[in-house]
Length: 378
Image (tube, rainbow, N blue to C red):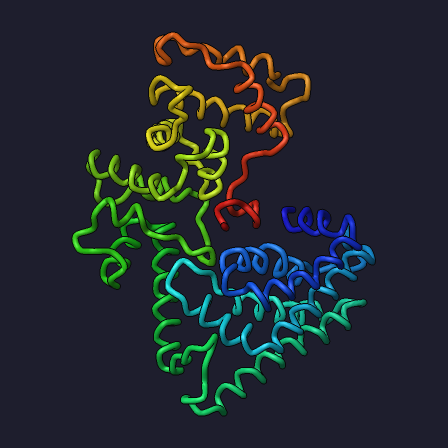
C-alpha cells in the first residue's frame, strides 16, 4: 500500500530518519508561522500515516525498525502537544482557518486515539499506546490551562486570541464548507446548491466562482476527479462548462514551468476521468493555459504532447505491461518529433523530447491521494 511504501522509504535508513526529528522541532519553533503549508504536508503525509499504521507480529512488513520509528514519531508528537502554541495556535491556524486548510490538530489527535484504542490489544504496542495516551493528556492539559486564563491575558504570537465562541463559530463554518465539498464531490448539483445557500458561492453561481472554489485537503475525494464533477453541473450549457474548465485551470500557476512539470503539477490535484472525451476537454483547457511558446507554434502542439505524455506515463508504469512491450525512448521521440502543420512544420527538438521521456520514466505522474508530499501541497 501507499502507507507501507512511505514507511519503508523512511525506515530504509533509520539513522537518517532519527537525525531529522530534531530538525522537525526546530522548524516548528523557529519557522512554524512561515511554513504553514509545508508543516501541514509534513504532519498529514509524514507523521499521521506512521501513527495510524498497525504493526503486529503477523504483518509481513513488521520489524524492529518500523516500531522504533513509530515510537520516536509518537514521542515527537507528545513533545509538540506539550507546547501550547502547537495545540492552541495550531488549532486556530489550521482547524479553524478559512478553507482550504486541513484539520491538522484534529488529525494528530485522531491518530493518537487510533494508536491508544485500536492497537492496545497487540503485543509490543505498550510503549506507543502509553505515548499516545500521554499525547492526548498533554493536549487536554493545554486546553484546560487555556480555559483557566482570563481572556485579556491570552495572546498568540503577540496577538489577542479569539474568544471560544468565535473559534466555535469558525470551526462550525469550516465544517459546513467541508461537508458541502464532500457532497459536491459525489452529487455536484446538490453540492452547488448547498455551497450557494451557505454563502460559499454567489447566487446565481458563475463559472468563475465555481472554478476557483478551493478544495480542502481534509475533504474526502470521490473516485471521480474534481474536473469531472465540474464538467457535469446542473448548469449544463456548453458555454458554462467551457468557462468553468478554463477558470479551474487558471487557478494553477504554470506559466514559468516546462510542459512536463506543469502537467505533473496539474495532475497532482485530481484524478483524470476515464472517458476520453472528458480528458480531451480538460487537456485542451490545460494546453491553452500552459505552453512553452518558444517551442510550440500553437495550442494544438501542447495538447497533443500532453496527451502523449499521459499515455507514456501509463505505458511505462503499468505493471501489467511487459518490460519488452513498453514504449522506448526512440519510439516516443519518433511519435512526437513532428506534428506537421500543427507546429508550423517545425519539428520539436529531440533533446527536449528525450528529457521528457526520462523525466516520466524516473518519476511517475501521481495524484494527490497517492502522493502525500506532492507539489500541490506547497
